[in-house]
Image (tube, rainbow, N blue to C red; front, side):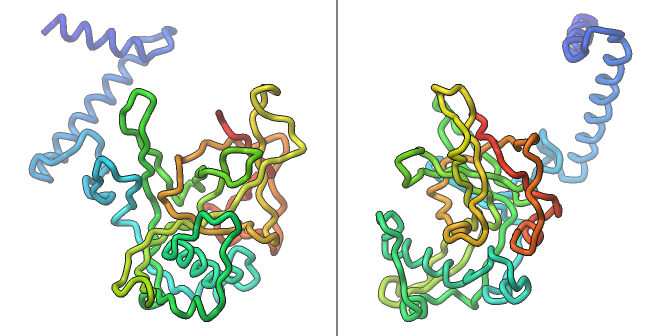
Length: 289
C-alpha cells in the first residue's frame, strides 16, 4: 500500500511546474478525491451505469457503425419552419432564397448531379415536384465527423453549433485542393420527389457560409506561411450554401488573424443573426496545418 501511494504522489508531481510543488500536489489529490466521490454517488443514482466522463450520455449521439461517416446529436434538436426563417430575419443575405437554394441542393443530390462541372439549375416547376415533409426542418446542434487516423485508428471531429465550427471539403478549384466553410446550421428532413423517390427519404444537410483563399497573401509550402481565408462577401452569389455531410472531410482549426481585427457589423453581415454568442467574426483566418 505504501509503495502504491508513493507512485501516486510521483504521478501528481509530474503534473506540477516543479516549483513549490507541495501545494500543487495537495490540490491534485483533493480534486481526485472529490472526483471519486462524485463518480461513486453517480453510480448509486444510475444503478452502476456511470461512465468515466460524467455528463456524457451514451445516447447523446446516434449509434454509429464502423463504416459510418458521421452521426448527429439526438437530444439537442429543434423544429424550424422552412418558410418562416426569411420572414423572421428580413434582409439577411444568409436567408435570401433560402427555401429555393435548399431545394436546388436536394434535387442535385437526388438526381445525382451534385458533382457536375457546372452547378445545375432548376426551375420553380422542378422545385415544386420536391416535397419537404410538413415544410419543416429538424435542426440539430452538433454532429461528429469520423475519419481514419494515420495509425489506422478511428478518430472524430466534433462540429458544435455553439462554437462556430469550421469544416473542410474537396474544392472544385484547381488552385487549391480544399474548400473551407463555417457551419451555420445542421438539419435533418424528410423529402419526397415524385419521379425518383416514391417513398419519403431522410436526408442530412449542413448549411454553411463559404470562405475564399486570400490571393493577396503569399502562402504555401514554398512561402512557409499558412493559407489565409476571408469570408466570401455576403452579397455575392455563392457566399452561402448547403453541403452533404458525407462530403465533409474533417473539422478544421482556423486561427483568427488577430492583427487584422474584426469584421465591421452591418445590416448585410449575417453574423448579427446567426452567431449564437453575438460575437463579431474576424476579418481573416489562417488554416492551421
